[in-house]
Amino acid sequence: MDQTLLEYDAVTKTCQELFEHKMKDYGCAWRILRLSSLTDQIFIKAQRIRSLQQNSVRKIDEGEVGEFMGIVNYCLMALIQCDLGIAEQPDLDPVRALELYQSKISETRQLMQDKNHDYGEAWRDMRVSSLTDLILQKLLRVKQIEDNQGKTIVSEGIGANYQDMINYAIFALIHLKQQS
Image 1 (tube, rainbow, N blue to C red):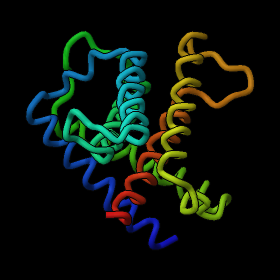
Image 2 (image 1 turned 90 degrees about the vertical axis):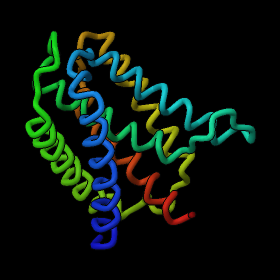
Image 3 (image 1 turned 135 degrees about the vertical axis):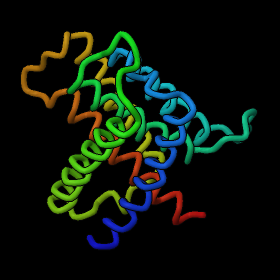
C-alpha cells in the first residue's frame, strides 16, 4: 500500500500542476459549467481514450495520459461544483480554487485507501482498457442520476461516482507510467 500511495501522490501532483497552469491561462472559467456539462466533458475524454485504445490510426498526436489527467481534473471541478453550486461568473481566485482542489483530492485519496484495503489492490491486475470501461460505466450512471434530478433510491450519489472515476483514472495513469 505504501507504493500505491507514492504512485498515487506522484500522479495527483502532476494533475494538480496541470490544473494550476490552466488556472493561469483561463482562470476559473469552469465555475460557470453545470454538472451536466462537466459530465459531458469527462464523457468526451473517456470516449476518446476508448477510441485510442481500439484504433491503430491517430489523427491527433495526443495520447491517453493527457486524457486521463483531464478526467481527474474535470471530476475534481465537478466535486467542487457539487459543493459550491454553479456561478454566473468566475468567482474563485486561484489560491481558493487550489485549496478546494486539494481538499477534494485528499478526500478521494482516503476513499481509495479504504477501498484498496477492502479490495486488496485488485486494480493492479486490471487492464487500462477495463479501467476506461469502468469510467464510461460510471459516466452513464451519473448521466442517469442527473436525468433523475440527482435522486437515487439505493445507489451512491453523483459525488461518489466522480470520486471513483478519479481513482480509476489515477490507476490507469499509474499503469501507463509503468508501461513506458
